[in-house]
Length: 107
Image (tube, rainbow, N blue to C red; front, side, top):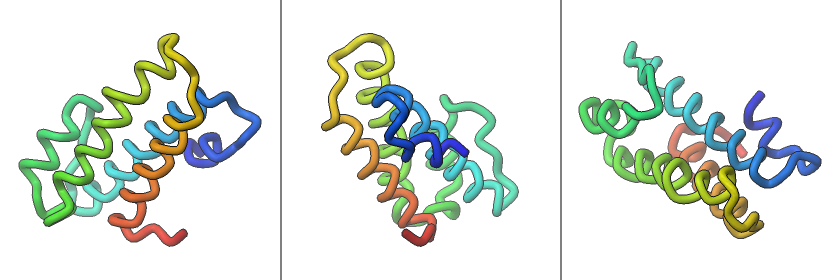
């Protein structure tokens, strides 16, 4: 649902970025849940992934860094009044697709 909203070009750039962010959280959560691990909160993504390297193996840092880049660098500027920027949307899409590929989601 979130990915569908993120890819819907009718939606505003900030809405699409927020939807990609939510889709990414749920994607990471679903991979963790396959191993019986649950993230519970956005703030716990890095900690839980670092403490459970078996979820993403050698890609663990890449996954949490991608998530945090959207969460801490892209979203605030786009959602809370910064300059709305198609470059930030494209970067968000890159990060989302990167993690999708790590998760084995086909294009």
